[in-house]
Image (cartoon, rainbow, N blue to C red; front, side, top):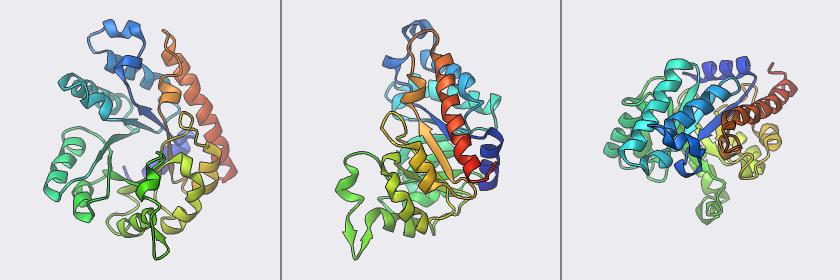
Length: 275
């Protein structure tokens, strides 16, 4: 899927919502835990209830690999289910990988070849040769960590040297490694005020923006400062949608929450005359 195809999906669904499948087994409804693969059953019902309103799903790999081989089976079943039933939906492995080149090559193979993910989140700290193996797959993407929303982001990401903050250097250097068709950037929603500066450096790239709802980020501010004439945004909500209810109606409630976000996103797209 390239930049134009992703934008077309956004226009068709009138949404730039990404639903995070942070499916922590301790938090899923108890009645599902009697089933053979409770995490997959949870995911499947969430996906079926929200797919009309979302253009992307983002499983956080930690919640799967922490369960060993059983967790990986749930992850593989989830991704294959999305790709078989809703082939137009973009699927991101939130794995935050990044290592020396040869190791990154194997990580890339794991997520972009052995499993049908469209993208994988990658940490840029080790530099270009740790990222480029992920960029060697046609129609696949890197979501590069640039500015995160956690408290510890202040430790390094805002370090200023010669008037350039570290996250700005990450953006200016890494944009040469890929294109708008295979690289997007992770920008935390709680840092929405930074989007003006970020867009000066990467005016056309997609931004994957976590931190809306549960972490307190403002969708209105993200759209105001981050949206481009090709939308350029995938805004993620995880807990605010998938764990909005813990009863047998959890999927129905998740669908309603996703619909609420889609309607708000439709409003911002219309304001920019994109619909």
